[in-house]
Every structure is written in structure tokens, then in C-alpha cells.
Length: 512
Ligand SMILES: Cc1cc2nc3c(=O)[nH]c(=O)nc-3n(C[C@H](O)[C@H](O)[C@H](O)COP(=O)(O)OP(=O)(O)OC[C@H]3O[C@@H](n4cnc5c(N)ncnc54)[C@H](O)[C@@H]3O)c2cc1C
Ligand SMILES: NC(=O)c1ccc[n+]([C@@H]2O[C@H](COP(=O)([O-])OP(=O)(O)OC[C@H]3O[C@@H](n4cnc5c(N)ncnc54)[C@H](O)[C@@H]3O)[C@@H](O)[C@H]2O)c1
Image 1: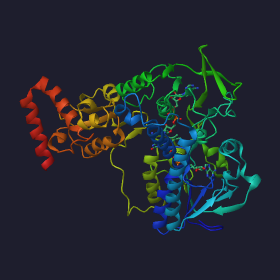
Image 2: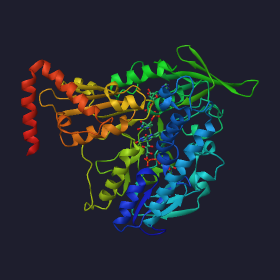
Image 3: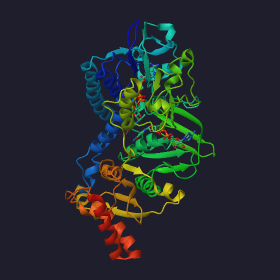
Image 4: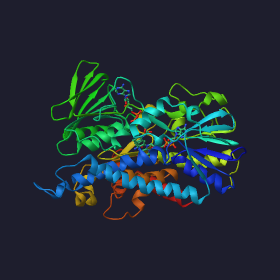
């Protein structure tokens, strides 16, 4: 990057750290431009880290994990406040932000705060950072109608660009976001609202379900979850696990309204100064709540880049198309992360960033290719995680499959910690025993799924879990229990002797 000359030039956030550092290590001069004065993007400031900290704060403050230890009384706080939660979130954000900044600075990467917008194919104009605006709400509004040229501060030129401008919450006009008790997932992190007795969550996607399940465990609070999908929500997850999640949420007071959309939303201020939210659904049902979280998806920030100046187009959701090397239709411009769409995960984008640096400079000396599938971690309460093909996908593809199940009720570790619900499900080929997929729900699900990931990356068969000693007591021990359960099912058909023969065959094959 140069002001009037050229090298690698990256823009913004989570994946940028890995791309910028990889490019700097290749000897390139790199600058990161971010419209927020504090770099780190959605991952650090409004998405991954804050929402997971929000969850941990609620679990801690409500004493949720310890509830089985205290009957009638509890060490948990009587009242959980938004300030308590958000203070904790801010502390963790500050730490993460400091780490990202220092890593970039240590690698001599320039950080340029300001809104970037293309002037021509090698030049971006830098406007004021959004953070000069008074608060997050004003910034969100600015993202929608900002014109960089009106407050241009400087111009920067570069030979190569990485676009990773991410997404922002979709905010349709009929939702009164100006009310304090009506928010999107970014605004939940502003501590000017109060914990509602009834929260209406519109959108049962990953964001909606994570926040709905967290808020639902706060004593005295319950949630309505509204989604346009008529049947299964989170359709990419295992059906049984999603059903279990919804069942557990219902037991704590949640009510699901599926196949529904919002036709109007009104806010009235009561005599005590608190807001009441009234939502009318297209079906005619009316919901009354004390707050509304609107989480029906996200919209790419690419509209802020003036892409027409370089002849780059987006689809109707604002997403940029790239080839398998993350190159856009404009040769020196690459794009990655949420602004190219699926899978839109912080976990994946770090790896994307490293690969972009390799492809951009045609240098594969340090390349470590991603191998196999990536896992999904959905941080609901309880958490859900999965990898590989789901039972639904295997069935649709007519691939023979058997299941091995381990209920947390069978695990000493789970009993010690409080005995909350959990299940591990292994999907495997009944002929070869090869592991095809795995799903878990319950405490530690997002951790133990990595056992399945490693086994799958090595084309492992589930009998592998019988030959390994697991820590005891541990949640990972569920793999051994599930393998025994699965092979027991197969043995009922083909007999124990044939199962043993196939295990011996696999063991011999592993030895080679
Ligand atoms: C509530 C929530 C929870 C999440 N939880 C998880 C999780 O648990 N696990 C997981 O793996 N993923 C999670 N994600 C997804 C994850 O946060 C994203 O995949 C990741 O942050 C994407 O990184 P990115 O670099 O593509 O974009 P972003 O992190 O969105 O960064 C984009 C940056 O670009 C800047 N920008 C935009 N336009 C301009 C411009 N014109 N000029 C300069 N800068 C600009 C923005 O200020 C921002 O800093 C979550 C997301 C949300 C919203
Ligand atoms: N743990 C994680 O990995 C994690 C957590 C949060 C977010 N994320 C990322 O953020 C992305 C966005 O999440 P999201 O939850 O905003 O979007 P999403 O696309 O996952 O879910 C949106 C939901 O809203 C519903 N919907 C859409 N329009 C509607 C309407 N008008 N009325 C009612 N319902 C409507 C959809 O049917 C869908 O279920 C995810 O896809 C994921 O990539 C990941």
C-alpha cells in the first residue's frame, strides 16, 4: 500500500488479521482500513465475542450451571441487569481488541481508521470513521446512507485489495428501532434497555436462537420466537437436536410461532416510563412484550464501497462473487468473509485470510490447506455443534447410515456437573464403520465435536473410539459410549463375530 504507490492492501476485521499478517510476512506493505476507529469487526465488537460473552455472563449471573446444587436457594443474583452483562462484554471486547491491534502493529501493518470507498481501480478515498458519530445507533443509521466523498480525508492507492467489509443487521422500515426496547443484535450491546419479562424474538436463525435461549433462562423472563419457516428452524442442524433444544426452551417458558411474519410493531410508553411492544403477525395473532429483538438475517456492507467505480457487481443481497482463489471479476481485487456469503463464520474466515494472501501474491511456500469439513458451533443454551453430513442429507443422498448415541445421562462427568441434558450422535457407514458425521447438544458440545472432526479428517472409523482411552470422567468419553451403542446396533443385524472381523480389518488397515 502507498499513498500514491503500490503493494498489498487489505481492508477490515476478523479475517483481515490473518491475511494482513501473512502478507506482511511475505514482505508486502499492508494497510488495514476500517470504518470503525476500533478494528476487529463484527467478530470482536458486535458478533462472535460479544454474543458468546453475553451468554457466559448470563450463565454465570443466573447461576444456571449450578442450579442442581441449590434447591430452594441459590448463590445466583436475584436480579440480572443489562449493565452487569454489558460490563462483562465490554471488558472482554477490550482485551480482544488490544490483542488484534498489537498483532497488526507488531507486524508493521498500518491501521487507517475511516470509511473506504473506491475512486478508481487502484484508489480508495478515506472518509471519517463511523465512530465520530455519537453512538452505535447513529453509526448503524450512517452505514445505510453514508457518502464518503462528502467528508473525504485522504486517498490511498494499492496494487491489490482484499474486500472484507462484512455485514450489518437487516433493519426494515416497519420496525421502530428508535425505541430503546426494540433492537437488533448490535444494539443489544448498548446498555440502555432493561431485561424484559417477555422478549419477542423475530427470526429463529442462529442469532435469534442464541439470544432467545440465553434470555429465556433469566429468572422471570420468557421469550416468544417468531419465524417465517413453517416447520424446522435451523434446517442445517440435526432435526432431533433442534427438537430437543426447542423442547428444553419450551420447558423454560419459550413459545414458538412458526410460519409467521410480522405485519406491524408498535411501542407504547407506560405510566412507569417503561415500553410495551405490541407485534401483530400476518396471521392476525397479536403478541405483547417488553422488548423485541429483530434478527431476520444480515445485509452486506458492500454498498458502502462504491464498487461501480471499479466495475464490480454484487448480487441482490450485496454479496460479491469470487472464484476458488477468492478473486473477484476484477483481477487485483479479492474478497472473503461474510461479504462473499456462505459460511459466514469467524472460525472459517481466519483460514480464508491466510489463503487469500497466498493466492494474491502467488506464493504457496507457507500454505497450510484446510483439510476436511469445518464444524458448526451454535451457542444456544444448551449449545449445539455438528460436523460432516447430517442424517437428513445422508438420507436424501441414499447413503446407508447407522447411528451411535450417547446420552449425557450415561456420563459420570455430566452427573458431577449437574446432570443437564446432552446427547452425542455419531453417523457412520454400517458396512465400513466410517464416520460420516456427528452432532452434539449439551454442555461442552462445541468442544467435544473436535474429536469427531479429527477422526473424520483421517477417514476414521468409529471402532477407533473403542481402541482409544479417554480421560475419565470427561464429556469426550461420550465418543466411546456412542461407538459401543452404534456397533451394538450393527451387531444385532450381522452378529458380534462379523462386527469384530470388520474391526480387525479396520485396525489392520490403520496400521498401514
Ligand atoms: C451476533 C453474531 C454472533 C456470531 N457468532 C459467531 C460464532 O459464535 N462463531 C463464528 O464462527 N461466527 C460467528 N459470527 C459470525 C462472525 O462474526 C463473522 O463471520 C465474522 O465477523 C466475519 O468477518 P468479516 O471480516 O468478514 O467481517 P466483519 O467482522 O463484519 O468486519 C467487517 C468490517 O468492515 C468494516 N467496514 C464495512 N464497510 C467499510 C468500508 N466501506 N470501509 C472501511 N471499513 C468498512 C466494518 O466496520 C467492520 O469492522 C457471529 C456473527 C454475529 C452477528
Ligand atoms: N454460532 C455461530 O456460528 C453464529 C452465531 C450467530 C451468527 N452467526 C452468523 O451470522 C449469520 C446471520 O445470522 P442470522 O440469525 O441473522 O440469520 P439467519 O439467516 O441464520 O436466520 C434468519 C432467520 O430469520 C427468518 N426470517 C427471515 N425473514 C423473516 C421474516 N420477515 N419474518 C420472520 N422470520 C424471518 C429466517 O427464516 C431465518 O430462520 C449466520 O448465518 C451465521 O453465519 C453464526
